[in-house]
Length: 299
Image (cartoon, rainbow, N blue to C red; front, side):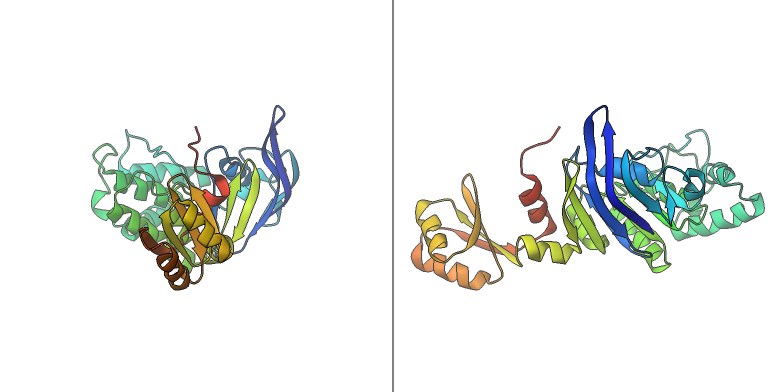
């Protein structure tokens, strides 16, 4: 559905996307992860045909994004990070007005609106203005607005930002339901748990380049292992880890050991450094993200 080869985007000499290649398969959820300024939003903008590529190739459904913008946009649904709904219109009127951008006949649009409101449990809010809606309701409304044209590709920019756990899980459920219907979904999120739960495949980007690509479980196993053992950063601990050729990283007061055999490394630490507190946990996508992109705050 989406194929990029050597894709580059520059702004006045600044390289925002640096010769990246990836592909998105039909009917999968594909994620772009990375810290602020990594290039993921710029990449999403090029897919949406709102920012032309500088060089390389980027095709959506076999069409070049620089020459077939109108044709591509007909097949896209976009959920922006901000809830940009019209506050002067009701829930129903927001959806009906948006349907006009796609020249959908009113009788067809009305039927779709009823189906979509039912899909996200907003039928009872049909004639409500936007302001009284909760954040979760607004987010669900923005989601179904993007579905009014029955898109083949759905672009989600931070789909659950600012939502409480109940609303977030409901959005996740609806996203998975759309995938089961054959909709291809491309998303970006800062919630690593969200990416791990939803994405079939993803890329981690930084400074315009792709650092890792694969399924969440594949990436975790490749860069971390299955588990992490944590203990104090102490010379005796470091010496023990080096003797056993363990993979580890020092983080000021702590040491993180990357392993697929947490019982064995814990046993050796307890045997050789018995006074040190030790914890073991399952490795996560967040561990990979921080390992690859660093732990310093980005502005």
